[in-house]
View 1 (cartoon, rainbow, N blue to C red):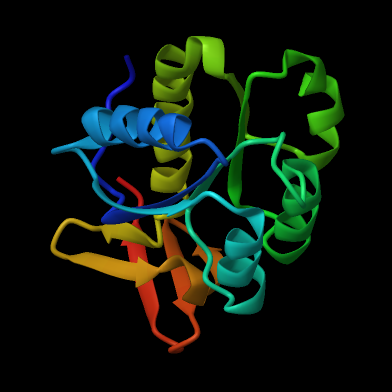
View 2: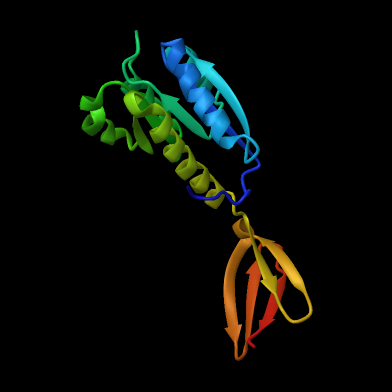
Length: 183
């Protein structure tokens, strides 16, 4: 199994299923897998309306949503559509007994399609991959090293790089240039 780098400080996971049994399976699998590796916060929903209220109306965005497709009132596909319109980069995993929906799910660009019949194994693999994606997203700075100093620069503040002979420079929004000598 892939290793985690520890770059994620905290991961928020929402689990939405109308059957308490499957909420518990998903929660226990995630908690056992991530315990001691990543701090996690879970929220559980047995009704899609509650999930809509939390994510769309109250604008609370988790890192990962594990969503059943076959739900009463509003199905998982309709929820996925609304969530993806609001948060296009969210990690969305469909969690279902209905394998026949796999191709229909592609229009919502799920991160994974997890079959409940193989819940533990498929969910473990999906969560490890999701955490690795979140770790890559969490990289927010670059470390620049020269012979005599180390500087940490926020990636979002980098405006451009420049080169002058054997020296390379980085200019950030704070207008500071960090010169690097080529060895």
